[in-house]
Image (cartoon, rainbow, N blue to C red; front, side, top):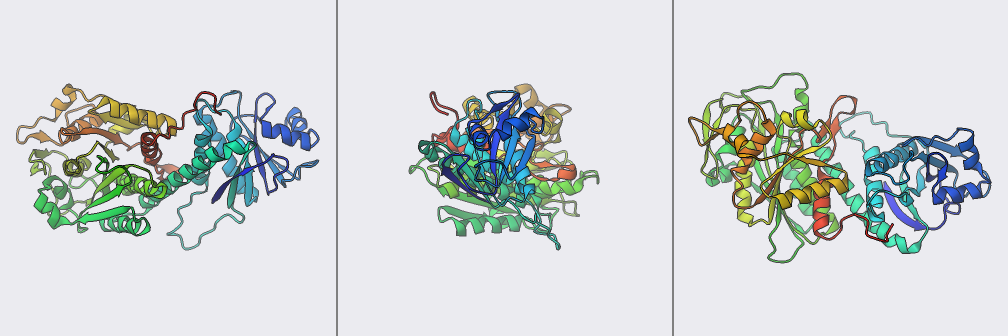
Length: 507
């Protein structure tokens, strides 16, 4: 889908459809007011007769508007009762508009929804979010279908209308950010949605190399099993023992900031299929364990978005990639392995494998002298029990870093919730036979998993994002979501001065 910005007036801009918002009970947005005047009061008349719904996210399509309106259609989107929209309401409105446009037959449209007032959000944020929400609606994963049936007349071009030429710069900047984030999310979704026989550790490495060819600012190295052996990555390699697919440690480096500035390091769990190993999972919904590499996918998607924007940051992405399968040589419950850090681990449950590959990757991250390290992983079912499918679990050894991520989640509306890293939880990892066990005793599974990882992050500021609940959807909407690419990108944009928060005296 193509996006652009155009200055003008709602009634004079031509196109297949013009999109405006109306708030209950009968409050027309500025663009809707202009359209109403040009159509000889058609919008107010339809409102009065009850033919236009103002419920949040409800849409009404008006064909062949009356009067002097240049557009062939008007799409009215209900905005609810609140004069100042929440970010959630704006997301609902923009998504509803994109769905209605996709079904309307209009191949191009001019949207005036960015003129709506969203609580503490500026125009650039609204433009970016419009692009992301629209791209989310039109996303389709059909690369493996033999009989693809796309919409007959899909929406191909969405223009953001601005009444004041001085606003076009902010709108264009927001669009650029939103498009890059949407591209990163789409890449993460594609990688997540591919089945385990097509998205292997080698395939992830190939994807990283493809990004290096696309963006000269990216440098990629792939460590093989022999390299990991030399480094002493016994924890990571213990997981890979049950698979015929060789493991990979994929390292992506982007240098856009000051030299020799310390980088932000992102570490993404890349278990391309997780059967649970010898501690095998139940068969029901095991197909969804292809999504166990969504942490890796989000790192690759974020790296791509940063390279596309050319952000002035130094960034490293580390992806430990392997399968976790049962085999005659697979790790067994009770085995003791030695991590790259030298710490020994009693593997009480082979289905707690994500922390085993991450701990070696976190030790490896130390060689980059990082400013901060953030790991992203579909780590624990306990996180879904605690937070459902709504929020990412956040744990950190540094409150300032945690606050940065919480703020990024609030602004991007890809939210996280912080959980504690208390000593009492860490004590649950004690083992009679090794330095630690890979699982804790009963209760607090998300926290004890993070406590385990924290033992490998003593030398730097670190945060852990448990995305088990948000990385994919089940049921009829089954598929990867691309989260938390928006949060990670907002975190990096904030560090570059682009907060998305409304400044005093701005719209």
